[in-house]
Length: 436
Image (cartoon, rainbow, N blue to C red; front, side, top):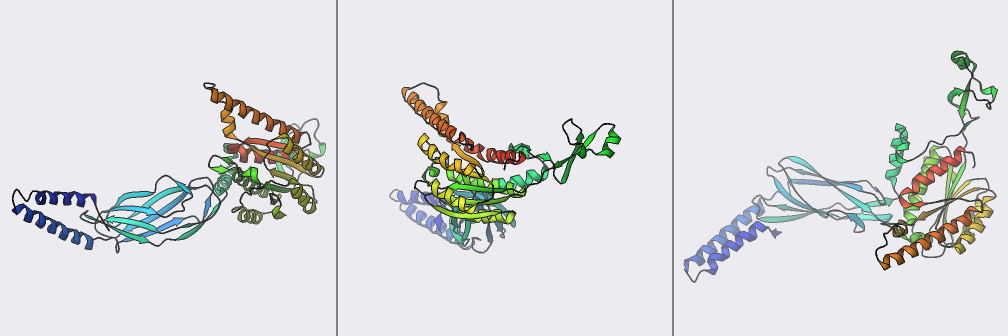
C-alpha cells in the first residue's frame, strides 16, 4: 500500500496549522483534528477498495514467439464493482525482450471488460519465462493505492520468425506472392498436370496439339503441362564464430535460420524433400531430407534454440559428413560468411568437390553497416578513413566470392532484409530450370 499524490497534498495542508501553532495554540488542535479526519477517511478508502474482490485478470500469449518481430501480449480485465477504477499495471515479462512501455496506467468503467495490448520483441531464440502481473488500484476516494499480485507464470519459446510463414500461407491462398517480391518461376513442359492451352510455336512437339481447341480457335493450339518433380534440398547452417556477428538487433545466424525455415517451408509446399545440417568445428545436428509439413516442424523444433559457437568453422568436417549421408543429387544451400581470399579458397576447394555431384548455392550476408559507411559524404578526415576501410572490406569480400563462383558454385550476397526473398527466388528459379 502507498499514499497517492492527492493524499500527500492533503497531509501538507494539515502541516500548515500545526506549523503556525505559536500564532494561536488552537491551530494545533485544528491540525491534529484535520489529520485524524484524514486518517479516518483513508481507512474508509482502504476498506472499500475493490481491488482484491472485484477485479478479474488473465494474460493471453502465443506459446511460440517469433524472433526479431513484434509479438502481441493481451491482458483481459473485468471491473465487477460499481466504481470507475484507476489502475496501474506492470507485467513481469522476460528482461531480454525489447519493449516500448513497462507500466500501463488506465481506467475501467463499472461492470465492464478492458483489454490491454502491448508488444514485445525478442532478440534471442530460446526458452523464456513470464512472471506474475502486478496491479495497483487507487481507492474509491483516491487517497490510497493498494497493490495486488496476480499469479500468471508462463513459459514461452522464441522461435525463428514464424510470422513470415503465416504471411506466406495467406498470400499463397490469395495468389498475391508478388507483393513480397516472390517471382512465379514455374517450368512448363512434359508433366502430368495440365497447366494451360496456348498457340502452337514452330519448335513445339506436334504430339501436344489439342485438336478440339484447334478446331474451335481455327489455329494450332497446344497443351502445356507443369513439370512435377520431387527433388531433395539440403540446408547447411554454419554456426561458427563469423555467424555471431551482429547486424542490427540480431546476429547473422538468426537471419540465416529465419531464411532456412522459410525456404524449407516453400520447398515442402513444392513437393520437395528437405533436410538440414548444422556445424561449427564439428557437425552438431543432421536431419535427413523428407517431404511434408511434419518435416518442417521437426526442423523448427531443432532450430529454435541453436546458438552460435565462438570457434572456427570446419568446412572439411561438414562436407565429409555430407558426402557420407547424401548420395542422391540435391540442391545444397550453405549459409556461411566469407571475409577474405584465404577463407574463400578453402571453402571453394571443398565446394568444388561437392559441385561435381550436387547443385551448390553459397549464401552470405552483406553487412549494411559497412555499406552505409561507403555512402557517407566526405566532410571530415575521420569519415574519409572509415569510408576507405569499408570499401576495402567490400572489395575483399567481392574478390572472395568471385573465387567461389569460378568453382561452379552459385552465390547469393545480399543485405539482411533481402535475404529470405533472394534465397527463395533463387530456389524457384533453379527448380524451374530443372538444374537440380
